[in-house]
Image (tube, rainbow, N blue to C red; front, side, top):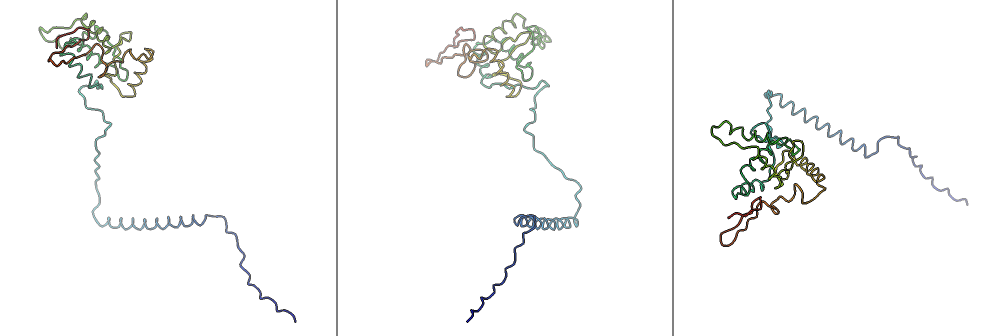
Length: 240
């Protein structure tokens, strides 16, 4: 007896490699992009159609806020300098305490106002400082003028205080930690140059001038008895 033949299995379809092209993920992504683009296009057409029925726009005005980088509005065309607020108040207190003279304050402010931008250098001879300070006083009958020897003594004292330093060839170097015409980057560059010129000596110009360490400038002893002494810039003591 012959066995019955096994039932014939249906032939499975042969797999055909897909042609080179975008993957399924790319196709889905492209479909989504196309659908969104189509919807956005329709919305834009509806919006455009809606606007066309109303009034046409004739003018559009845009108001901008103030630019924080705008240069400050200062008097005159000579610009402005950055100054230590501590130093400004210290000058006023030292003047009242007779620690510095009127001539020294006048010479320093005149030189500080004439420094070249981003250098801390003022190009003045002592005669030019004298003439500049006397500009207004010379127009006033009977006014007392400052003399060149007085300016010379003031410059020497200011160098002792380390507010100024001679730089040669009629140049005066300001202590740029106190007053500086320029930005902070230029100030740091000038300080680096000064430090190199003084072998990075921490006691040399322009250091040791500040709220916590002010040698030979303002040493006030406020006693409980209500009296004190003020040591002026020349090392002399005066009654408080």
